[in-house]
Length: 188
Image 1 (cartoon, rainbow, N blue to C red):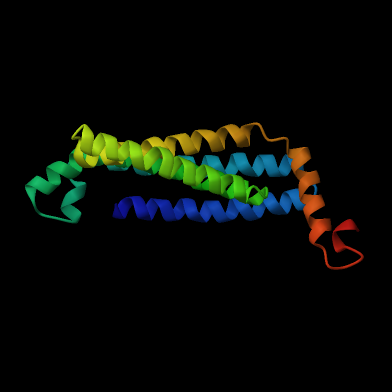
Image 2: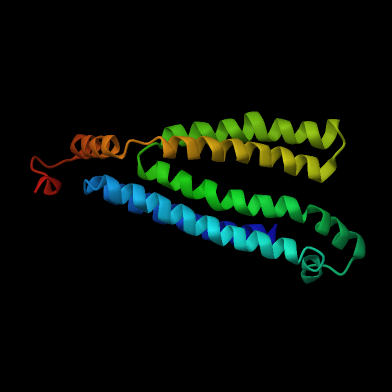
């Protein structure tokens, strides 16, 4: 989980970058630049997470010895490394797409997707697999991955279907709506 946290922090940085870049491009009336920014930041994060996942899989029999000397724990970690690799890849995409959604002003939608996928899909599925089907940690983790997969698919689908010209208009509407000044700097 330590490795997952380290890689996840990279994705959180890309999340912030995506949010700021997309919102700035939409506010500047550059829909093609916003769309290009989404592709670039998602690709960069995805590539880094795939590299980390490949390293984890390649070192799956050795990686646990950085944290423990126990053979039983090392065998369990080795057995769980494929789930860690999948988690790394999903956590390389999902936060970035959440950042894109925030940059577009879709915070409420993303909140519903996150809560729904986590609490309605991930937690119950994890409990079912882990306890009812007696898969233990693998089952709980697999269930949570199911929620993350669903969340990632929804965010990819929404982002891919985005009309960036319409998003520019929405951003300009929000800027005008919340502008305190009579004359806006953005209209120059």
